[in-house]
Image (cartoon, rainbow, N blue to C red; front, side, top):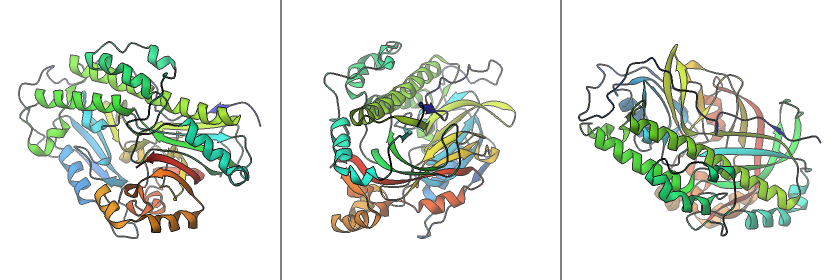
Amino acid sequence: MGRKKSARASGGRRAKALPEQRARLPDHQTHSPALRESPAPWTHFRCTDATGDEDAGAVAQMENALWLPMAMAGALMPDAHTGYGLPIGGVLAVDNAVIPYAVGMDIACRMKLSVLDMPVARLREKRETLLAALETQTRFGVGGVYRPALDHPVMHEDWGFCRLLKAERRKAAEQLGTSGSGNHFVEFGELHVLETWGDLPAGRYAALLSHSGSRGVGGAVAQHYSRLARTLNPGLPDRLRHLAWFALDSPEGREYWAAMELMGRYSEANHALIHQRVTGVLGLEVLATVENHHNFAWVEEVAGRPAVVHRKGATPAHAGRLGVIPGSMVAPGFVVRGRGEPRALHSAAHGAGRRLNRTQARAQANWHHLGQVLAAHGVTLLGGGLDEAPCAYKDIHAVMHAQAELVEVVGRFVPRLVKMDTF
C-alpha cells in the first residue's frame, strides 16, 4: 500500500534557538522575588462528564501558578486533574524561565500511532499471534530492561554534560525501548480514518498505539532539577514551592533545558524501538505515523512575545498539527488536527483524564466487573491493574466535546489487544 509516511506533532524535535531579547531574572536566586500584583490571564476549558466531576484541586493549582512573577498566561484543559505544582492538563506560558515540575515527572511522556498494512479482520483472525508479539517484544515497569541493551543513536549522544545523566546512562541504556508502568501501554486496535491525511486515504486500518515516556532517567532528571530549583528559590510560599524555576539563561536553566531535550529524544527512541520490534517480528509495513509529547516545554510566541510554554499532560495543538489523544483501555482514542486556539495556548487535552485517583480506583473496581467490561467492548488485556480500570477515567467523548474549538477529529482508534505492566 505504499511507502512509509510520517506525520509528526512537535514532540522529539529540538527546540528553537532561545530569543536574545527579553526581561531576565537573576542567574542565581537567593530569595523569592515578589509575586505578581494580580494573576496572569487564563482560560478554563471545562468538562463536566456524566459523573458531574470537576477537579477543584486542579483549578486551585492553575490559579496559584498564575501568580508567579514571570507568568504570562495559562490554560486548563478539559481532562485536568490534580498533579504536583501545575495540574495535569495545565498549560503555562512564562517569560524567560523553565519550571521542572511544570514539565512533569515523566519528561516527554509521549504517544505514537503506526498505521499498519494489515487487514482489520486480522485483529481477530490472528489474535494469538498479535498477543504473542506484544508479550515477547515489549518490556514494562521498573524491571523492564533489555540485556544486552538495544541500540539507538540517542545513546551515542553526549550524556556527560551533567553528572546526573552520566551516572544514569547505563540504566537508561538498559531501559531503552521499554515502557513505564501505570497508564502506559502498547496496543493493537482499529483505526477509522475520517479524511485523507498525507498519502493515507480515508478508511479502516489496523494500527499500533503506544504511550510511554523517558522511564527512570526522566524521573531522576525531574527530581534532581526540581530540588535544585527549590534551593535557588527558598522564599516561595508552600502553595508554589513545586513551581520553583530557573532563569532560562542561567547555567542551571541551560543545563535543565539540555537534559529535557535529551529526554525528549530518548522518549522518541523508546517508541521507535517498540514499534520496530512489534511490527518487525510480524513482518508488517508501516503506512503512516503520528506522534507527540504531552509533558514538555517549548519556546513559542504568545501574544506577540517569546515565551516558554509548559504543557503538563497537554497535547500541542497548533493549527494544522496532528496529534494523538487516547481514551482508556476500552474507550476510543483520537487522531486530531490542531486548530491553533490562542486562548488554549495552542494546546488540547492529552487523554480522558482521571476521575478517580489510584487509591479510589482500586477501592471501587474489581476484577470480575473489569472482565465483564473488557468482554463487552471486545478488548483483551495483558497485565494492567485495577487502578487503570475504565471507571477511573472521565468520559472521553465529553472531553472531546469540550475541546471542539481546540482540535478537529481526523481519526478514531478503538483498542482491541492491550498490553500494560503486570501487577
